[in-house]
Length: 75
Length: 425
Image 1 (cartoon, rainbow over the protein chains, first blue to last red):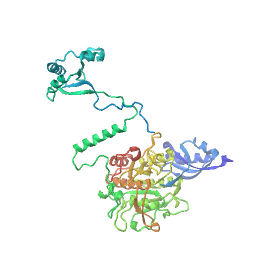
Image 2 (cartoon, rainbow over the protein chains, first blue to last red):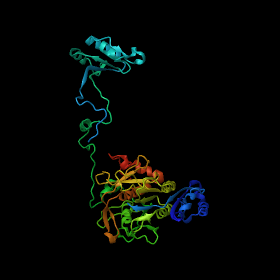
Image 3 (cartoon, chains in turn yellow, brown):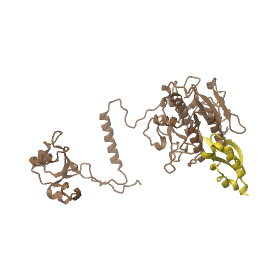
Image 4 (cartoon, each protein chain N blue to C red):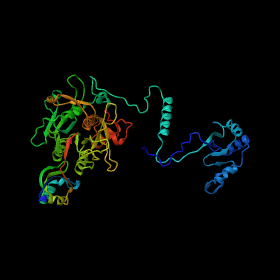
């Protein structure tokens, strides 16, 4: 059951593929990510993925890193 | 129980403990002449000479037998002198002589783990004494820092950062403040050029928390209703990005969306008085920080209020994001200000006023308040960055360098204050 837990994630697109970010988005979606935001200037894609598919996203071409979405506070 | 050094200097040791021998220093290239002078005055001759030994390694048992030794490479000799010999040779020593100086040979001890408090105290007093003698009466005492105060003219922070000495206004610059939004109806901002956007689902830009308004006041505000100045880049265009909710927290996705917006809209500076306590840099924020710099945008973030021993949190701990520490009005680092991480290599980059910082609040929360935090220090750096950007045309990494180069060094560890107190151009 925990494999189906949905994680909110932040995907960093690598420097070589930031100019073709849409193709990385397509590949992420094929790998199971539900994409919510595409931020082309900074090269970030945000959305959700089920826990079982999270590791697989890291091998998608053009992906530099996959992190869990963390909360920040006013300090 | 206080720690003991592994190699204590014997308690009976005094600074003037001597061996009974004297060290003679010869004028450069005058060793032979000096030895002749010594022999004329005292009859002492036949000293062991290091040059006569293999590899110039003097056999020290020879010194006693010969009454002393010469070290020609060093230009010194060590000799046993009785009182009579000492008086004779003393009168021959001096600036114009082949013998420059004669001093008693002292015993030295290996210093182990630490220097004793007494030794250091005496050393410090000697240095201070020397400093006082050598300097004029106007010079400040070593270690003393001035204290600043709020007055009718301005906050203490704008004095300490020399903003009050600057004619720059941030005109033509775009400063983004990603926070809890802003009180868009605040009277102090009437007539200002403001672009605003909320990235918090279900909430508008209007600041229901206060924090955003306070930070914007410092970075981009001007004067309060009594004419006291509290803001820096007062002619800049303010980009208000609400990325934190009215409860003061925000998802990374909201914050990143705000960063995208600020960079895409050509902001030269982004002020981020937000974060967490995770000491590991985030690949996403580090990459975004780097891309921001490449796009001519400098991101400044609060180091964190979980100090003094815990280390800078995200996103400030990214190398490409400038981390700001908090100082009080006597330029001491605030106890709560997070520190650099010597293991992870993350750093505090610079420091700014962050204790009792007076700035604007939403009118319905009191209109003004004095707050503490690395959050308050951050917009000082952001506002001043806008002044440098206006004045020099520099952007990104070059703008970063201006800020750190012109920061005022402080007698504090750079792990706590980075390059020092930010200074306005």
